[in-house]
Image 1 (cartoon, rainbow, N blue to C red):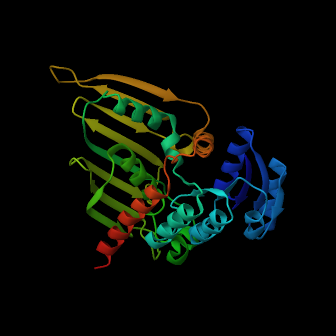
Image 2 (cartoon, rainbow, N blue to C red):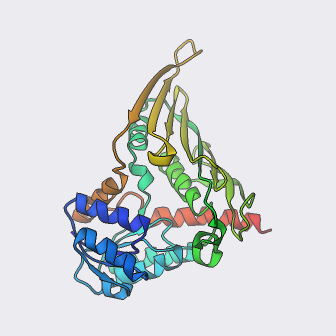
Image 3 (cartoon, rainbow, N blue to C red):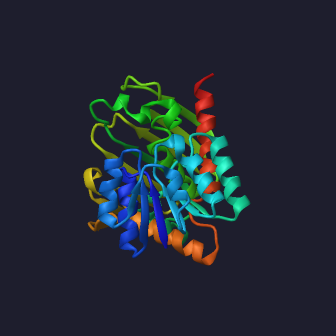
Length: 325
């Protein structure tokens, strides 16, 4: 595949590395910061530009959009309109209306759009999903998940804390990943309770969110995402009628990724427990790209597409509306 990347920050760099790992060609990269674009271009042998329209106009198969949230939908719509497939970082847009516009543009132009829900491709979560589908813990009852970090000095002045740019705070940021994972396991969700609050940071957006979501058969998802976690944390627990799966850690500062399977015994009491550790480098970005490449080749819906993003934004919209009454 011939790829172009718009946005050469942390996510753009990870996407570029995944492309090279998959033997794809990164043709051109773009960033408003010319030096940052030049640095990434040098690592992958690409052309560096400052205007994203040059990327859209290049001879490419796919455009990866890894910018701040205020330009995700605009650039992605331009790319599908120019005949390119798009991998756009989550949450794909600032608002539900922007997400719908991107979904409709992709359908109108016959292009595929995948949203960067790379957490689906972490090995512990992939294995947990497979085990759930195979009935390892029986019918699902509920999910309990936490995800958070502690920010850094000056975090309240960064773009994620500017609502006109980000579209929201921690609910949009790490909360998006938790909601997507809960929908992946449980199916469509509706809002029972949602609180998006500002506990610590002097910002105009929420730094914590607490959500209770209900699945199609009454299953529950209780989710908490936080910018005041202080010690980075990822914990995703899946409860079935005959056992529990717990995925903890994402590597790096979140700790080693680990999948724990607690199997309930017929006599109940303490369960049998199996632990799987994953010490390999983070391959989720490469796995996600290859899944999208396969979807393009097979002309099928990719996992984590704009329908998922629109559903995500509908929940985010409803939560923020509930918190502004």
